Image (cartoon, rainbow over all chains, first blue to last red; front, top):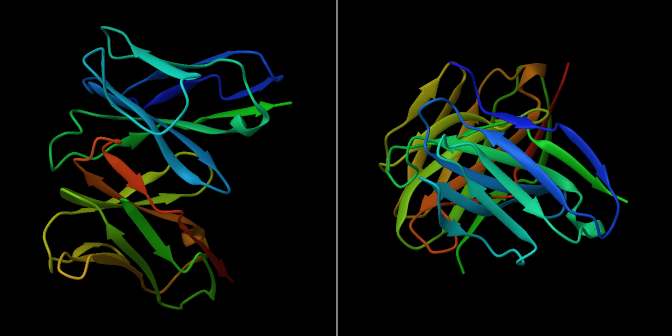
Length: 115
Length: 112
């Protein structure tokens, strides 16, 4: 079974631009979560989608948004990029994270550098 | 405020040593505690613990959860250089701010 895939793997943008990252979950997984990982803050939860609906949201500004398609693929968008948005963005999928026995499987991440 | 705290933040050992990594948590509506190993990019799943006092084992790695004292430990025996990684602890809870809250990780370096 193929794992979680993320595209692109690396991205360089300048301040003020916007960016869209893509995540394809493991086949059959319906929950997709996004995380931002930085050396200072560690892994921080952005949002979770399940069946095309945002089910949970972390403490990030409205510049960060996402969506999920009917095939469970998900995209996240960051508008008006700031230097502090430079990070590794990880996507993780699971069957349904709201179940106690569920765990998430992570993709390789997209490394975003904002100049 | 919900939080997960890992200690130590970093650790350097020699091959063959045994290490214990700690994770304490304060969350509402606890569901499970997870350990991940992150070497270069994607964290890879190690263990999920939901019940107190039941040890999970996988080769040289083992983990146990204490729900009364709100902590978990990850043990690695006979460490190898391939164990060098960041070990992440996360708690799955039912809060409104998301399902998983992560600690900042323990960076383990195993020297030959």
